[in-house]
Each structure stands twice: as C-alpha cells, then as structure tokens.
Length: 162
Image (cartoon, rainbow, N blue to C red; front, side, top):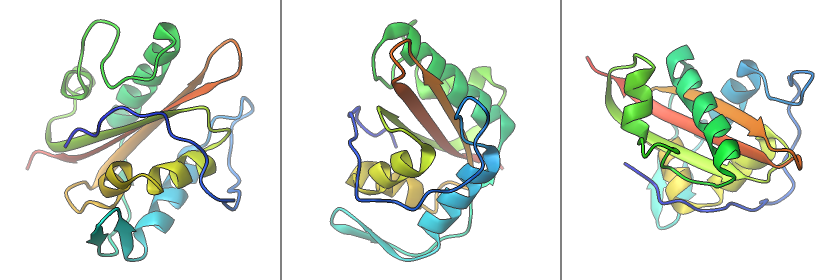
C-alpha cells in the first residue's frame, strides 16, 4: 500500500517519550514504544476499524532506507514519497537489501519530535491504517533536519518475504 503524500500537522497533546539522541533524533527504543502503544488497542483509522496488533520489530535495513529518504527530502526541500532520482519505496528498501512481501511508507514534516509525528500519523486515516495493518511486522524510521530546523520524518513498514 502506498499512502499519498501529505503534510501532517500536530494532533492533540501527546505525552512525551524519553529516549532522544543529543541532536534530538529519537532512539530506536522510542520508536518501538510509540508504535507498540499505537498498536496495543483497537483503533479507528478513518472509517475502518483495526484490531489491536502485535508490536512491530525494528529492522536496521528498513531504518537505513527510512533515514536515507528523510535526508533526501531535506536535500530536495520537499515532502515526497518519490526520491530525488525518481526512486520509490520499493527501490529504497531493495537497495537496502531488504526483501519484502508487503511495504508502506509514512512521511511528514514539521513535527518537533517522534511523539508528535506518530500522533499526527494516527490522526490521518491512511497513515493510521499503515501503522495498524497486520500486513506489516517490521519497521524502520528516520529523521533529518533542514537548515531552518524543520524535521522531515520517514516511517517504513514492511514484512519480509517468507
């Protein structure tokens, strides 16, 4: 599933989760906690109801693909699912050495931290559906900051080929 590009705003007043690097980038543990909490209960994503799901497992290859895409969006100064050379998510995860049977990507820009960006994605039906889908078992996340301080976020969700 490929969710259309959109600039996501802040949603509500989320609780802060600790575990950020010195530059403010969230740790892998922070992502695991936020995504596990999101999937821990039944959730409405637009008009669809998703059952509570198992926590997602962090995957370094997906993380590398997500980080590279966040950096590329900063380079392009543009929120996009397409890379600067026209590459797609399938291209990025393949280049990272990940063989997937299912994949999706959430992108956003402007949120100050991982808690806010996950809350924003959960407030968007398509992005929420990606997070809640039982089709995905693993994730990778990336963030980069442009010269003005705006953060560009990427979440890659996937399931390995069996």
